[in-house]
Image (cartoon, rainbow, N blue to C red):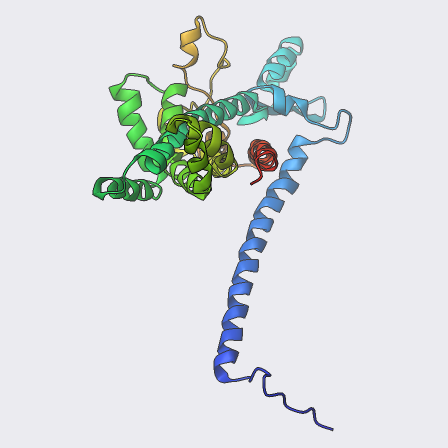
Length: 346
């Protein structure tokens, strides 16, 4: 017996068929993008884990985390194929002079570790985000709480939005011209901090201003009615409730700052550096020295030296550690944001 047709039942028309097909295409495109991202990250994790982890205790390649990059020497000795870093090879060669008679191949940046790169990346991210959050939150407070809406303020907001779309290489050239040459800071942490901070500043200003706008006006009016000044109202009644949103913008900023290569290439990064950042003669030298960094190290190992099986494992291992560091910093921001959100629930 055929089912009775209900008057309110949706009719399967050609327009609904087209709508269903378009909906399917959008869904398929979304899942395809997610699949591509999962494949890329999965490839880095699987191949990088082979460099970071090992089968024997302590099951972590501590050398990769604690030493500087070195050249790898691959040679035959007494019928065995041996792989030693530059320092270990020189020691071995001094103890066994007959090694020099055999064939030995060397591969740049294929031994040792990435400890100086890890230190440089963390310093660049922390320093630039501290500057960007300070300037960005102050600018957002002025635009949202003090500035009167007018032609000039609208122009400023439009300029901030336009700056968010400027390519990172342009910020790198800007930092090179202003901080490295004009201010005479040379290739240094300080030049890298300000270049990266200015690059991420538009995102932080926009997100912080939106977070401030989301705080109900009643919070401000109640505080002012009780005799508090405008500044006291902002600090005590507005900013604490906007902090979760501001920290969300910092998470986006961290992801962009940590992954940029072009800006630090001109302002802060060295291919190789013998000393660690704190190994300086006086404290002020700490800010005016360049550092090694993970994204620049990946760029050099991937494109500036001959490619082989030994450089490949360094590339994937470095990328794997890089993802871990960004994830840890972002996770810390998320945890802090959630705690603040639970503390200052409306």
